[in-house]
Image (cartoon, rainbow, N blue to C red; front, side, top):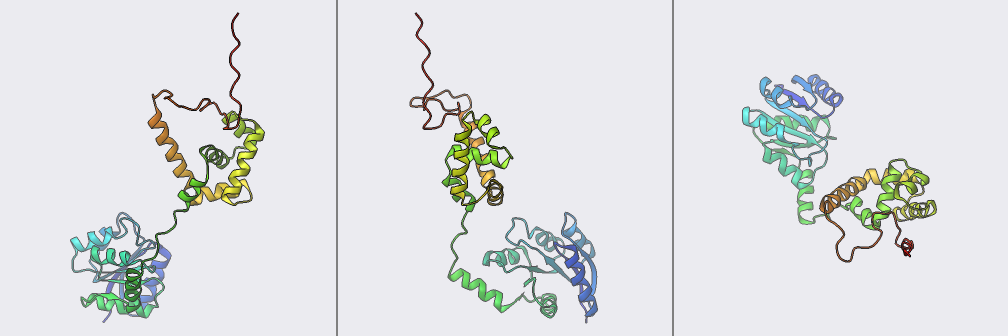
Length: 261
């Protein structure tokens, strides 16, 4: 006997392809839609026996909010999540939200069909392989992922961070020098140091790396925080002369004003 179901996936094309394949196997697919603000409402209004909910990012906050809404308003609907190989927390989050199963999105159609049938029967539908991977990670947790943006930011001095931000804005050496009130040769040296520390061969690569790792966002946030903290505060004891005037650490101080006669 076929299952009355709905397919909801991040990618409409994949949702429609899965729906077509399940129709050919004798199941009644009520709708195929991409997740949106109305996805859960659509499932609630149609009340299928099973909802296949696809997600590309099970670790994303709120990924399983539609499951919570569906189970709250239609507790009889069995929700099976289709997603990538998750962390144990990803599987736990899906079941905590009320899902009846979790199936890898590269599973064969027969595996998806078996999960649907088990979920409709009130059983938990998760493959032994996924459970084994989850237990393996719990027993042997992987190290925390490297925050590359933070690591790279620590390599650069505040002046080099400013240079990198200007490079990312498309400024050439002349504009960098003018904007920072330093000599073009000094600006060029800073740019070369930035490229060397980031281990890239061009300004374009440096800008791309900074954007990809979130380095620019971190730098902008840090600069805004420093500006807010220093707003209205005058130079305190021990302040370095020349800060804010574009002087380099090795630049000579400005000459003293001539003595009046």
